[in-house]
Image (cartoon, rainbow, N blue to C red; front, side, top):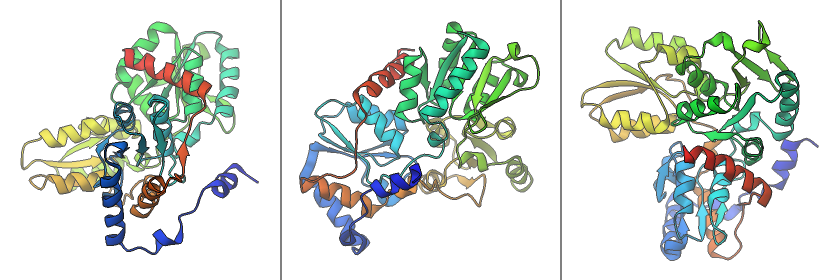
Length: 366
């Protein structure tokens, strides 16, 4: 039995009573329970969530921001509308009196799943045998608690798409080389912005357990984990060229999880918050092609009718794992809490939590 099968069999399935409720009934149930639980309940909603869920969020934002907000509330129950690694981070930062729940345990992150702890330990042994004690591990916050813990134990730090450049600058004051997990594109774009040439970046393939690089290994400054965001990798150079041809007066803004070639051709690039702030502050009448998740793009189109906004890739689908969280699962999660039998609690063990927080704190201290 493989890991995926074991995980699927361990997941509590949505009871029929919620499957059979219509949207009005589900909306009424969620509203009622939110009112009943009051300040004991906090619902953080990630920017990529469906509107049917996001309308009930007490706060919306990026993963780390939402985890911090959750920990700073007095709420006893945190029902995280996002994906698994986000709920883990919320549990790591939360207090003992708080419990974190994920409405649907199938809501994972394909990028985070591209780096598991066993693969990382194998890579670390191989790379340190080649380069000695010259490597500092770094991980994007879009990673599992186990990876954050590994990084924390080995003197490294987490990064967000907002602070990656600043944190990477610090990292190079600590060690000669960096191992960047799990998103090769954010790592490559960040290092390139720091002036590190592409020919000083290698890629570690965790499947074949090989280092991909042509040239003298001693020239390597950054080792990029071969992982990616399945949404952002689907934006292409062709998409940008098509926008330039059809809308020559339209600005292109993309997330740094996109490929290097796409970021290079865009007008602006930055974190989800950067994209949102840029659109909000843009003059009325401006035109934008946005290279990020479709639920967010649709929300920006709705919230800014005075601007012409399109998706950089018109055929892009919403993040499939994010969309696991729907209104029925949210209703089930809240109802189970109110009934005293909560489901799908996310609990990170004490040791992993300790070292994960160490990695997060190193980042936050900067």
